[in-house]
Amino acid sequence: RDAPKGILPKVGLKNCHSYSVIDVREVLLESGDLEYLVFLRNPAGNFYMKEHEVWNGDYGPKSGLWTPKIRKQLGYFVTEEQMKKAKMKGLAQLRNFEEAGVKKMRLAKRKKRAPSKLLSSEHQPTEG
Image (cartoon, rainbow, N blue to C red; front, side, top):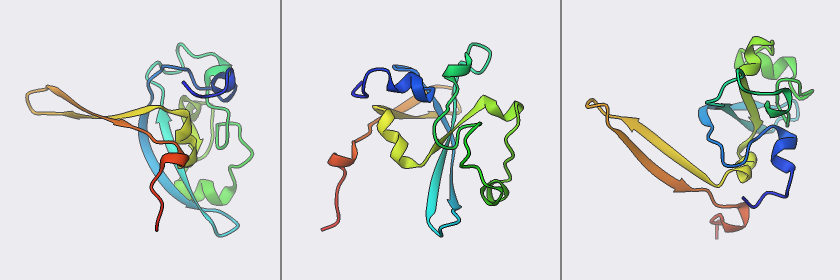
C-alpha cells in the first residue's frame, strides 16, 4: 500500500496479491557477507502471468547476481522451468509486503491462520 506508485509492477509484484513463502536460504557471497534469499510462489502460477509479472528484481530468474558459487550453494540453476518460482533478495524485500500469515492444517482439515503485521525498518526494535 505504501509503495511508490508503479514500483510493484516494475519488480514483478502485484498489489493486494498473496504469495507463499517456500523457503528462506542463507548464502555466502563472494565478499564474505551473508545474504538471505526468500523463495516465493505465486499462487496464480505462470499460467496467468505475463512476462512483467514475474519477479525481475535482485536474484530474479534473469538477474546477473546469480553466481556459480551461489547456484552451487543452493543447488539451483536457472532454467525456463524454474522461472515459475520468484526469487527475492533478502529480508529487506519484505518492505514490499504489508502482512504475513501463517496457515496450519489440522487433522480435521480446518484452517487456522495466524496473521502478522510486518513492520518497516523504521519500526523495528533496535539493540540498546
